[in-house]
Image (cartoon, rainbow, N blue to C red; front, side, top):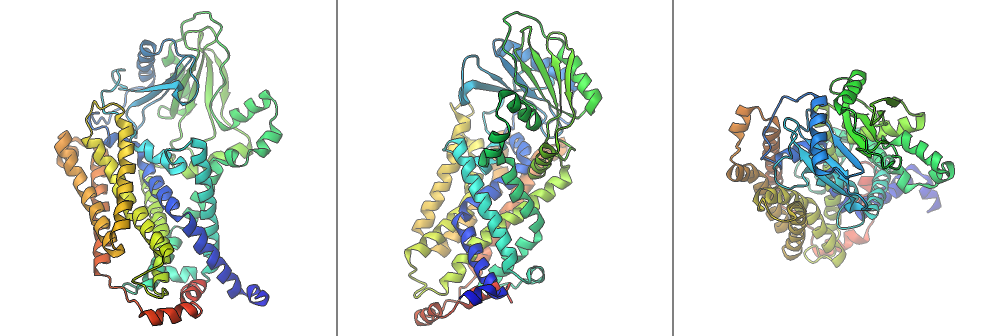
Length: 542
């Protein structure tokens, strides 16, 4: 065994085993992370579609005027708050999302939020929804568990993904040749070809997105260097200044003082970063003599999320500090963070992110399916698999086909739940998990092949009918959106139909596929003999 392990073939066999099990053990969570992360590249557009009451407007008012209107709204709603913050509108988000801190309250319930119309300064009267933000948050912290637990779990999955990618590259010695080889209707061979093609298609992207995903939360996973290097409060404030635009406010003086006109401060920032270069405005201790105003630079067109901001004295409007750069380590982190989020991208680049990330989702999915396809042929009696195989096969069905139905189910809930329903946004999320759990139950109760076909057709039908449901419940149909130049509604509904076609094609392929299973005695002999399939995998499919 020692001599065998030292050979390239022995190494590839070991890497093949590592690749298979690293992918399988967390594959279902990885698939969910990939798919929800993929749609998150359009989370602003999804959020707009999920608030159909908001009229589509192409023109954006001057940012300084918007800031003045929103400040007046915050003064009316949260005059006693120690902190206000709002994001200025841009091409992708035409509204102003604001939040403020409740005085004397700590924890997650310490904040309230509202969405303002930038043209009027009034709170938008739209349905309560988490929108695309839910998919974004679920992608790296899941749900129904403490945030830190979810992020740790996501980090463990990302590390397994990194191991699976590296071991997969080592395993397939003819990986780039395999990219140009695909054979339809060959059972296991076709699944392996599909997995190879999808893996190589976006290999640099998959490596980048996995590694940068780990980097975004590196201070959570490996805090020891930070704790050793930054021990005093002053040093920790320095670290915060290098990694975030949050400026620790001073304690309020208790002396009332009016804020300087916020529009003038915004114009100073526009003069520095451009008319469309602003991100967020944050006010600490508004109405106090020690008030501070921070105007941050936006991420669009900037391949780094390292903080850039201007700090003003609230009472006089005097410029106190300008931060245009950070140290090399913080800048490296900012670049990796920006590459992962893709917020710098224009529409073409964002679609490329989406498509390659969708290929990554399919890569994980085909890997999960290939595990069952390879092992079914080696079962003593494929018609009566052992419990472990049976469970993995059902989890595959619910994780892949079921997740598509669950995501569509959340969009259905957005259109069907009563507008005045208490905790409406939370019930949209509950609907997502209720539908997903229902698909798992269906997969457990039905024969595997029938469950695949039925759930894929269900996903296709739900996606295809969503634009129709939206028309019935909101009165906004595709032709009206085209006439109004509403690119968000048009793009969203055409994408839903494209995804419906994709699921229908998968359902048809599954219906037409006839598995070639060996007889029980042949399968027993194949299971006892060295696995030729594993040899194929170790040799890259040749």
